[in-house]
Image 1: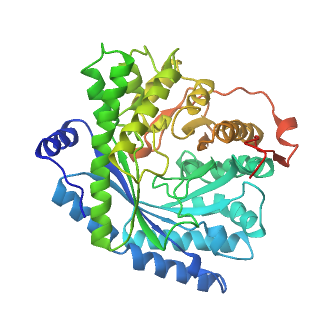
Image 2: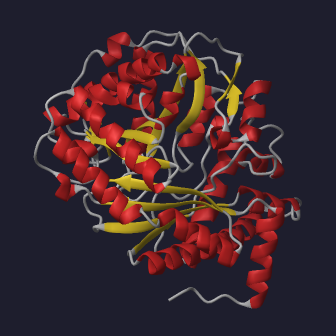
Image 3: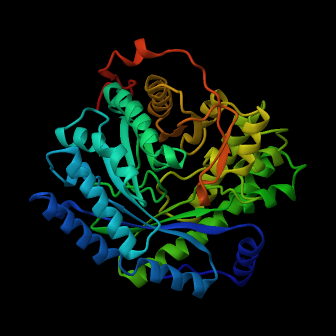
Length: 455
């Protein structure tokens, strides 16, 4: 049944939509491909295309209907699938590229913006299929338009697979080189995780986990502009009051997300999964997480106090969302994707926000080092070490962290790059050119932190 709303709540939500950039960032349909196993590459790819088209054929039309009926903007319609390394037991990277092409064709046929799940879960080790899929990622992302890829290299219980971490450093570099003619944009569709969630609706890290049903509807809401306006009205309030204001705002945003998710579920006859209540910024003015932090009194995002302000914001968003729905999932919190957030971009350009500070902020935010453009000269070893550092934060703190960095071929720190659309653009950030080769070359697995002396 749809969620019940009072008239005042409806009017306030309409104002949020019209004035404060409130939207449903994505309705993502998760699809299990576990019954697509078996046979040669042609058989597998045909099964994959048939299954995606069968379940997602009406997704865009239904989302458009809901948008029209309720006046709620739905920015993206997406599909996530079972990690392909678990589905396709193929014999070469080239055959996995064919799988990626099949996913891309299916995504185009059903009209979704992105399809996620060209993925591998390698936090404790690599199977033959994992290795072949990972080897295919650069070519797969260079040759497709809508396919997104993710690799989970660490968990709190397994530790960090440093062999996979080093390999991903090399894969990111190869992906950048193969898409150099488009400012290495292939890397914007590739993310490396610690503690990857099985129900994340956001790209590039969405996949349909093995614990999920045959199909499910997951919704990602967004509301940085709404939170910003609420704080601006109470900018002299103490932090306890600000936290309460953020909680109430997140509650309203999440209620709208659940309404849309359950409506889509009913119309598609597919179970409703979760609402991911992350504050997901866009390049639009007034739709920035950095602006929220600055409205709290931080002179420029990245300056002293930024991490504390972000921690409060993230916690208040989660508390408010948890009161609004029993189905919170995905990542849920505040995103800090540099190229996608105009305020973060300004902070980088001014020099206030550095890579080191962003790493500190990821210890309290929703994900990690996200959509960061780096000089093309950065080595695979430094990228791997950055991934390892971020994975360590996630592993020790029992949270999801991720790295989506874009080493832009042929460009240097201080130059600008534009990716377009929701991916935005930003200033290329400098990095510490200190060689970590001796560290990442050890290989093996960094053991998980002790939780207790029982499993």
